[in-house]
Amino acid sequence: MPGIVGVIVNPIAGKDIRRLVTAASHTSDGAKVDIVRRAVIAALESGAERVLLASDPHHLADRAIVGLDDRAQILDTVIHGERDDTIAAATRMWKEEVDVLIVLGGDGTCRDVALGWPDARVIAISTGTNNVYPSPVDATSAGAAAGLVATGAIDAPRVFRRSKRIVTTIASTAGIIDDLALVDLALIDTAFVGSRAVLDPAAVRLVIASTASPATTGLSSIAGRVHPVDRWAAGGVLVRLGRGGRPVRVPLAPGSFTTVDVTEIVPLADGQTVELQGPGVLAFDGERDRRIGDDVRVSARVESSGPIIIDVEAVLLAGAAHRLFDADHTQHSKLGGP
Image (cartoon, rainbow, N blue to C red):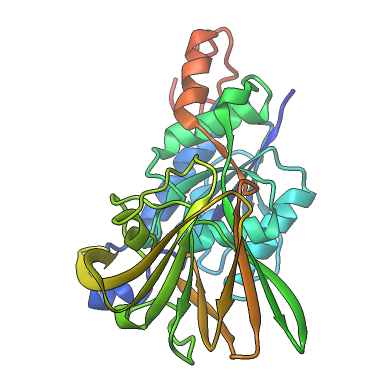
């Protein structure tokens, strides 16, 4: 059956202060427009009935579909120019019964999508600073895979994988707040959220990582260089930092290395609860977000309950095996060529 593909592009992703103090790359608005356009054309080529795009303050989505037919539509949503836009857009996509959601951003953007739609089936294209959760997948391939899955042409369990998340509960006299991270949760020894990016390695007290690879940058790279955890393996790892520990060189931002002192490494089983003690600021997926006092109780656990990741290559391999790319099987939109 024809299906619906959704697209959320974060215009702010890949543009924070780290471009001024590190060698982090910049993903321009023009580049994002081109990525979105390629994904939309490919999704329609693969048979998607509609492609719904979340509106954004830079009008990237509007620019991406100029000249395309009315199967590509902009959702009329309220825009504030803040991260809540992404959360609201994901929730709206959920209500619109979108079959597959293409997301452009970094770890923080993907986290916001998970907050708005916990069980979304996503293809996350990396355009942020820290890109542990999303991947540098080609937009044309991403759109083609999204269209095949949305229409039900490919529905094999092997193309879907449930990702992990770090479920966080913050309890204080004011009440209980539930939150989450997809890659890492850190406790930062500071009283200010500020620019949100974590720039002072000496202030990092601990990191809980669901995915820890020595091949990534950001806070999770601390864990990745002392206790790697595969993104599909159950559980995670807790790393505590402090003076006099094991000195480890890590890239907390692209092209920027520093030394941190690791005092403790604790492997975490799936669902194992860890208690955190303030004061400080909690950083979710590399961004400082919540200030906590010494009277606030925080518990966190790594669970295999995050959004569903679609394996783009597996989808396209299945499509080739079933001859879905033969001309007599496809519904050509004529948007991408003859």
